[in-house]
Image 1 (tube, rainbow, N blue to C red):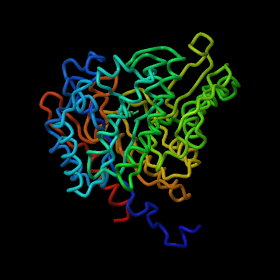
Image 2 (cartoon, rainbow, N blue to C red; image 1 turned 90 degrees about the horizontal axis):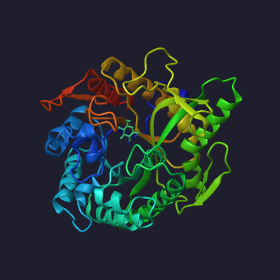
Image 3 (cartoon, rainbow, N blue to C red; image 1 turned 135 degrees about the vertical axis):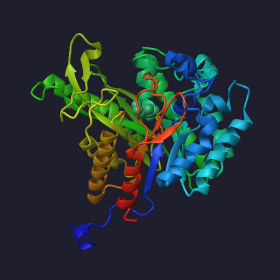
Length: 423
Ligand code: BGC
């Protein structure tokens, strides 16, 4: 009602809303000393992926052309500290130059300190389930917070739960374990690092805004009539989406695996959050299947009939509203730090963008405090365990010639930014 009174159709996007794109260093530029460099054989032919480490100036110019006012990117730790006792000042200078170029374009940088990759020496000697991991990571945080100038927005970790699921439960990411006990030790160490990193960044950067980027999905029972499918769905929602939000409110993780007693883990993260980053892509259906691990079977179902994405994911824009609703319990500003689609079909990419931004607009009209939207991603890149053909980019990359070719979705995003921000 109030929005009608204040002028029908007025843009609900607040001034200073971040219209951005998100990337991660390793996915664009690789790194010879990263654990992932040898983890996925698909990278052996393309160790430098898009060659962004050399072509960064041209790529940053694409941001300017798009008209975004914010850019989320990560610092590749294995470039800064290729060996335990070696700090590469030229790598620090490289990322500083990126920040300076962005500032020159009037684009707000948001830095992610950990986006899945580690220096190989770290993951071999100090993987997250060892307490020694904390000191090693925090030295890197201290080095970045004390040397990078001009960065206000910081993500300590990208998708901490994906690190735990991939690295400790499914074993598909380094350190490649399937070990519940160690996953819980890793959880405690990673979140303890977040809490301490929060303080370190604030000690060095006046006015810093610090967060994590949390991967949230919509979940639904495979068969609504089946109480076991419904029970699994509740458990998955709690475990995957909500428990981290509650832990930021209380300082305690309550870990509930299906069919077992909850475990409580204390972590020093209560209120260590200036905003909350949400990475949202899709919906997952769940079914109880006694022949699967923990009785859980996951599936993407094409409920709309418009087809799954190149990664086999369902497109489900309304899920974004659900996760925003739950995250708003945190009572800090929310930022959609990632949202995007892997497809060769640029028409679908355009529709995906429009439909998710429509949901966001609806959320803003309802009064949710959302301060930014970052499309994943700028140019096609390396997709974890899927190689180079996922095609999330607004710009298509020809991996032979390294040419960046604008897709109609890039033009559309520029238009969307202009029209929705009420410019
Ligand atoms: C990750 C990105 C990844 C994207 C698409 C997000 O969960 O942060 O690194 O490329 O999803 O899978």
